[in-house]
Structure formats: C-alpha cells, structure tokens
Image (cartoon, rainbow, N blue to C red):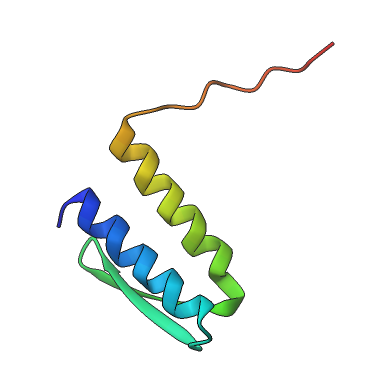
Length: 66
C-alpha cells in the first residue's frame, strides 16, 4: 500500500469517525487498528505523520527563546 493510499484510508476513517460512527478500522503494516472517538487525536496525528513522510519534510529541533 502506498503512502497516498494510507493517507486516503486514514482520512476516510477520520471522516467516518467525525460523522458519528463509534469506531473505524484502519489496516497498516499488516495490522488492523480500531480508532474510536476517544482516540480521534491519535488518528489525526497518524495522518499528519503520513503526510510528513510523503513530503520528506523533517521538523527542526525546537530551541528555547531567550
């Protein structure tokens, strides 16, 4: 499964979750993960991580402001 396909699947799952479904299932790396409303943020972070890996962008380390 390509990164684009995984992003699409995860976004579809988030959409279903936001529409009120109690749980949605996403298969990744040969494992099935079920997301519920209580871990919606985890699904959003997973989507962001996939998009970041697709773009190849890396976050710079945070430095304190003085």
